[in-house]
Image (cartoon, rainbow, N blue to C red; front, side, top):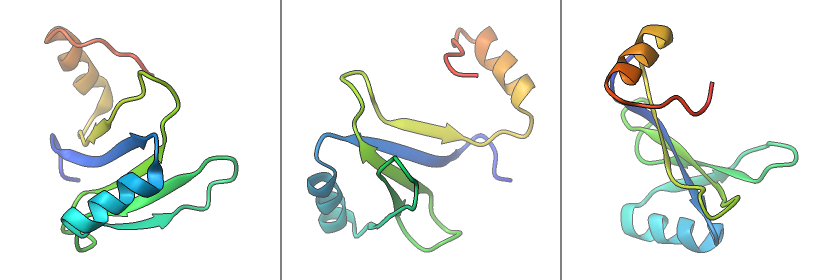
Length: 93
């Protein structure tokens, strides 16, 4: 596993079709609607599989719903402790 680097990202959007079109045009990203009952979610391919970071896009759920980056770590408990000691706050667990 690649560690201490972004392994996935998510972009909330008010207008998914419009924003995905922007990323398609500007960066050549590919979007595919995922099969998730009850939740509209699009998988994002930013480049060749295995050589780029993939992500997701969904309809924004509220005014504070911002972009998310997921960082790979070897061992989650020690990573959380290091994060807290550096001043971070765990908001989801």
